[in-house]
Amino acid sequence: MIPGMNPKKMEAMLKQLGMEMEDIPATQVLIKTDTGDIKIDDPKVVKTTMKGQVVYQVSGLTDESVFTEEDVKLVMDQTGIKDKEKVEKALKEANGEVVEAIMNLKS
Image 1 (cartoon, rainbow, N blue to C red):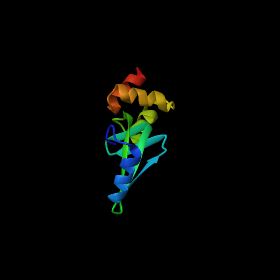
Image 2 (tube, rainbow, N blue to C red):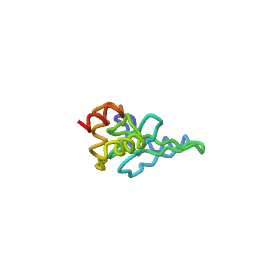
Image 3 (tube, rainbow, N blue to C red):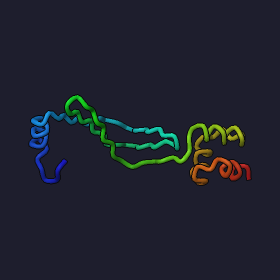
């Protein structure tokens, strides 16, 4: 939105351009990548449709993981620790380095 512009006026202008915007009530957005997951809690999600194309805009505070679910499982298997939160914390502290996380948890 443009600061200082009346939201109703902005909405009318967008409709004239063939754009529709819709707020999506979301509690969390999870983006899976090859290098880890990005979790956004309490996000603001806006769906914009223009000429048949849909774009989602997401904003909020992120929790970027530098490890995958496979890394978590591997550390759990190697250490015998079944507490997923404890393993994830160890991986975060080790910047996603699986071997370092395993060594830290075993010591």
